[in-house]
Image (tube, rainbow, N blue to C red; front, side, top):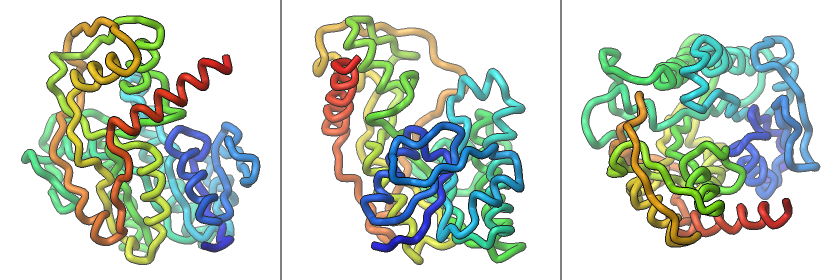
Length: 305
């Protein structure tokens, strides 16, 4: 494709490391901006405090485009330290947008989430669905909405181009062990019961992480300038079905039920037609295929330990 330099904050994390893989496959040069070293040996690494404006600005110099994935994403961590989460998830985006402006870097592509639709009405939503500030929601939702608004504001005030990618719920190799798919796989591998919050009827549209990473490369297309995209699977998977599928793949473990988690995301039908029409993004993995590949990865990790 090219040797253009792409900077990526959070490039050592779960989704970020897969985005780095996808960028390298597309023959981009990559600079990972993250306190943790990158998983790939053939990239630049900048160990930068995301709230230090000068350091972030230096890290974005000569970047053709910037992916901003660094964030506090665990809702339990956000409840435990809400002020710190606002600093990272909201002020951190402003720091990157300002750094991009000062460094004269290329387009800033910000990771958001379909959780923002918790601030909307209706069961079917897309990128044009308006937010309602009177809704009851998680702080994480407000942080991401604010971050998206900052992107638009920098375009309005300074002519700075942006793209917003609203992730579905990613899963796959390297995910945090507390994410539901990982937690269920690991518990099942240990023969432990699979505990479900609520009755298990709540549905999620999980996106295999390699498919999500592929969307980032497509988002570098000129058509994505100043656009927002949902990156959601078409498969609705209930948590009960997830548990039962894991049980069938791994072994006969017990499935138990507990109270509903406060502030949990009420799933909506999130339409991703815009990403398909404008970027040509279509997830290649079914949920079952992604789950099998993830299980294989965990078994390899377990064998190496």
